[in-house]
Amino acid sequence: MAAELLDGKRLAEEELDGLRDRVDALKKRGVTPGLAVVLVGDDPASQTYVRNKGKACEKAGVYSRTIILPADTRQSHLEKLIDELNRDPEIDGILVQLPLPVGLDEQRILARISPEKDADGFHVLNAGKLLTGQATVLPCTPKGVIAMLKAANVPIEGKHAVVVGRSNIVGKPAALLLLRENATVTICHSKTPDLASMTRQADILVAAVGRANVITADMIKPSAAVVDVGINRVNGRLVGDVDFERAFKVAGWISPVPGGVGRMTVAMLIDNVVELAAARRGRA
Ligand code: GUN
Image (cartoon, rainbow, N blue to C red; front, top):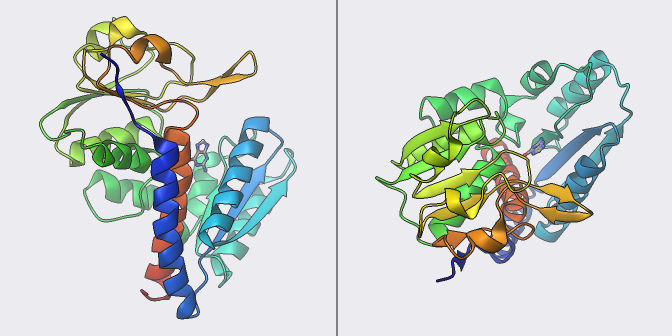
């Protein structure tokens, strides 16, 4: 048996189509949603992500401004820029691409972004709201993971979801969102002994490690839903964290890389910007 593909590319295109309609409605009321993307340094992967975010804005009719700063940018300079963007009436969402170069205090930078303009949902106030079950802007990748599972009618409630990875960007918020959907959630990480014995219990397996082939077919429960968040470059080729070719034969659903979660992350970012614009400047 072969798995059903969790087609992030197609779903993201549908999401962006729907978002364009919402943007048009906002524009008719004189509101053009705007996103500022800040990239510090010259990490090639970050450059690609930032470019894709700009392209998606264009597709959805969202105004975007990309600000590129050198790797040796000082903390005070970056904070001043964020203060300006916080005050800028054209900007509804601010995104600082992570990771930041060493020497910059990531948590302090994220906390400097106005929670009302927090396009990533990384501000400690919004993270706290997610933790305590309050409505808030959601981190884009975990939000995309849930949207993909729901679009494919993967049952979540009462199921055992295993998240491999505990980052603030993906692992932790993904676990909280799955919990919100009434899954029983296990978070695994680099110090988890016998990872395979945990992943084999997963009805829903979210792989967010950032290393190629850490999830092999023998680690997957037959018919499970496997969501691959990894984006790794191996010999010039993009691959996820899952050994896709073999896992495809075991899983019930599986997301490919590329064409999976990555596409959804960008679509959910635009969704967040539209939400923030509507909240700040009046609903369409
Ligand atoms: N780096 C990797 N993923 C993300 C993301 O979703 N947002 C930001 N700002 N940086 C990232």
